[in-house]
Image (tube, rainbow, N blue to C red; front, side, top):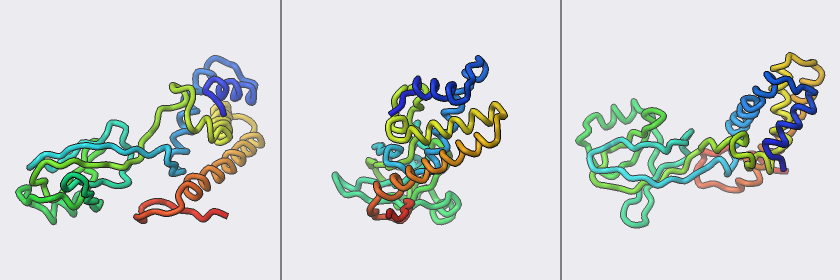
Length: 212
């Protein structure tokens, strides 16, 4: 378990560098490592569920502010019946439903832009939606304590050390050592996120790796 204060201190001790410019850059190094881990390993902690609404004759749905990528999007047809939409390309929807007057219960969705989904057919009524999505959690730099700090401290530490030695143009042998330690920590984390925490799944859109 490591806090940001602990991590920052460890990086300075490993590198034996407390120069002000270097220390000021540590937050960016940590954020770069967090971003890399979040895109390599699909952990449940990086998933969120959000409810929204669509209105009649409006085929656009706004994504949450912390949205990165969608796992699934469903429309509630009635009080509790979930109808999962199929993810399609924008061009498919535009060609298949070229008339915005083609209305009904939405069956498809596409990522229109980072802030908006395009639905088809155009909703014929108001519906509640449920989005299961990949999001970017708050960095340990500002939160001080995070899941990665608690459960993946080796990946955070060695990943940050790789960034630190790259910044310092440090010794290649140490950089290679930290790179190897970082990769080993990622393998264990990936086994946890894509293996042990994902024993079964309804759809095939999620990564699944065998666990020994």
